[in-house]
Image (cartoon, rainbow, N blue to C red; front, side):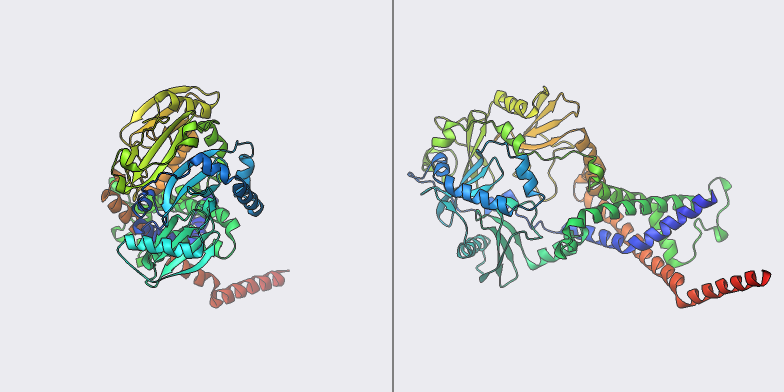
Length: 543
């Protein structure tokens, strides 16, 4: 028992010393992240800044543009494959090697006055195809400046612009490899945009303050400096081990706190002067109480941070592979998508002057044409060969193709969010639409599939391991469930416990520094040497 007690204190002490600065930074950056504006542009923002579409007769159908661009697309695909890194994109390509090449998603937009089909194929590659001649279009530096100028004018400003650089993988932008490289455009006021050279889309917009929040928040919180220093390949391992050691430090601290707390219940003995904890010194007392009261929440954050790294790949991948998505859509590209010719929107539903995009969606042999307005509404456009809405049968058939041998156990329409499908802060109905269709599969993993009934998109899937992950990571890290998800309840909850964490981290830094000075000070080393010398002299004399 003495050894275990000694081990408990030593583990907590030295892990606390080693992680004190990290823990303080994690809590501080957590506050910053809470109030940082997302710098990656969501769907609502992109639509709000888009050009009016105003389709004209004579524009090419999607099928014509796709066929005319075949050789150019092959060349781009070959170049991308040659540049693919040893991991990541290369692995994705190998997994999708047997996926038949077809159109997975297509949107008709205007970019600098020219109509473009923005296409994603079933291999995950993205292209901008001219609706005038079918040629492949890429965005030059000069065009990026014009796109940026239009973006800022829609916000009511007219700044001076310059392209700072063209980059392959900016640290501030995640999960957009298919759209690289990016032109980085800046204003004289410090605002910046990242514009895809592949499609001309604005993926990132930020002010100096936004970037300051990012670097003081996410960049530090997620160990992104390692990427900047060229150590990105070990960042995952650093996060994993830091999260594990932080969890152990919090757990041992809680145990010590409960063992040393003497509340005097039932007439039991307290410490001298009626104290319920053993410390007199200021920082030790604050460390004890913030750890005892806030330690449980700190443990939840540390544990969920560790879980977020998916240690040992305990949890399944929540994303669909390209092969699965292709199977869900079906091998057949409906004739309506190939042959439909754009036409003036005066004959279509909705406010024609406010429509900024037309998009084709497909499930099996069925096709659906949607018009998107500047404020995010989606209006079904019925043509001779397309439907106003996907049928329940086509939705279930698509899910069955995806599920393979597993049977569909149930299907229901949800008009409200549930514990597994819900908007995060800064998201709305455009990003997380309602209603949604929830399909439950009769497989061993109890897979739940959420899809958008208006356009047939797969929104998310969760098997049993991903549902566990949702509670062990997101619930314990973001506290995004029940009443806690609503603001300002969420803000109050988070700020209270982060305040405890900041005091806990600050007291750990001070106590740890004192311990290091005491352990490694010259006076301490001299005393140790004298003690050892004395013992050796005594032993020699006795011999």
